[in-house]
Amino acid sequence: MNLRHAYLPALILGTLLACGGGWQLLATSGPGHGHGPGLHRSHHRRLPAQEERRLSTPTHLVLEVWGPATTAGSGLTVTFALGGTAATWRNVKASDAASTYVANGTAFNLGSGAPILKAKLTGTTLVATVAEKGTASPKAINQALLQVALDLQAGATVGASSTLTPDPAKCQILLGDGSMPAIAVTASPITAQ
Image (tube, rainbow, N blue to C red):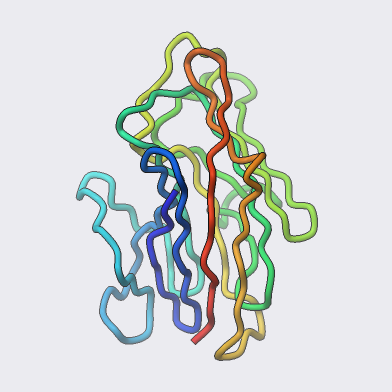
């Protein structure tokens, strides 16, 4: 899983790398792609034009989990612990109900009624899950599966850092056959600048 770099004024988000088949955590684009105030991305691959979204702002970074082109699935769960003083978890959209922390991507059709879309924040550890109801029609997962978001921590000073640490046993994809293999993930630090 890769986290594409995204820069906020005073916040740089590092890279997540995962083993096994091209899993990626992508920063959505935002305003200010230059080197002044605003959101910046460095050492990144640009998302295809039809996938480019402007959800991030200079102090709010939306991340999307994408899977490899060779896999189909029906759901995903991820667990990330956020440490340090540079960033904090936030709702993806300001209009979301309080403490929502996750939004559906573009891959899964959550259907009618109560969707399988849930996040729980315990301290600084976020568990987020999205799934279709049933596994009969798995979807291509080389697109946005779910979204989570970080904000610049109030009072963060230049040089403040944070870490995004995934739980290797709790990051899993629900495949069409009903199995839930783990996604091995490592992370680099988040630094305020």
